[in-house]
Image (cartoon, rainbow, N blue to C red; front, side, top):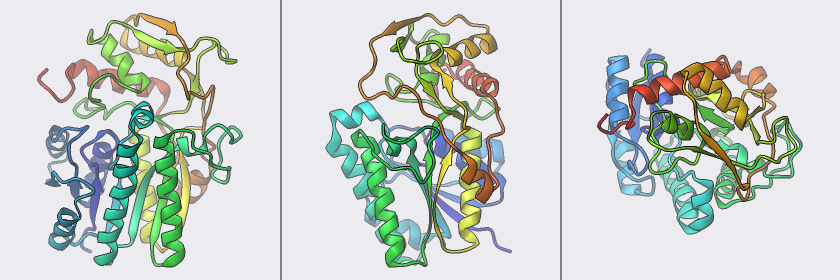
Length: 341
């Protein structure tokens, strides 16, 4: 049987690169589209080194319909995993137009080209931010959605767009994956998280302090009603998250459907718990200071992952220790990320 070919948009980014690696290991052929605005082509070179397989790479923007059409004309694409988009909550508040343009207009461009080439299998990278501050914890897929920032609203808007698309044409097979907080790296230490500028997320900030790239960690708020006063989040190893995409893709290839799944561990971990676990794994002291709460931060949230476990046969396999160990292995071996070490 011929292997299926998957287009991965945003495939050289953090989650995309780990998913590309797993796809190749599972025997899929992979085509990557990425404009490299917040990623490095070096990640794909390292994936090829790890898998001894080639990736077809196109440095196109997701809004480039002509470029997309070229990819679909050149390759027999069987399905798409769609990561491409802007992803900073703070940046989305400062520049909402860019977020609506990239995340929504870009997706529409992709869907138009998919439709014209009769490719109707799509895994969409959504986010737990669609739940906002109204849904009861743990979040369930049936909970009311109420995104509270432009980034979350773009994800929710695309989800609604895809629901409308499926309603108009039930031959589409679509999986909406709501991520919680991905951390960690491939255990080889060859690929990992390499954000441009000051990291928005906790783990890359911790690891950059650990290698001396930053002076200290800012902990946003120490007076929440939690066990240690800091925010609680649901952290998930990026390799577990990548595996969830393959499980979703396999289900889509079995028949047309539209489904939504939480991809999280179902466990809540505070900022200081994560910090202390990292210190114990890396044997490094991380200086930190507690500063004012960050606008828009929720006190606590975590997933109910039961639906993904039951319908996709997927659950997290890696612990907080694994996440910290692999994140440190990546950063320690790549202090400048994919740049010159």
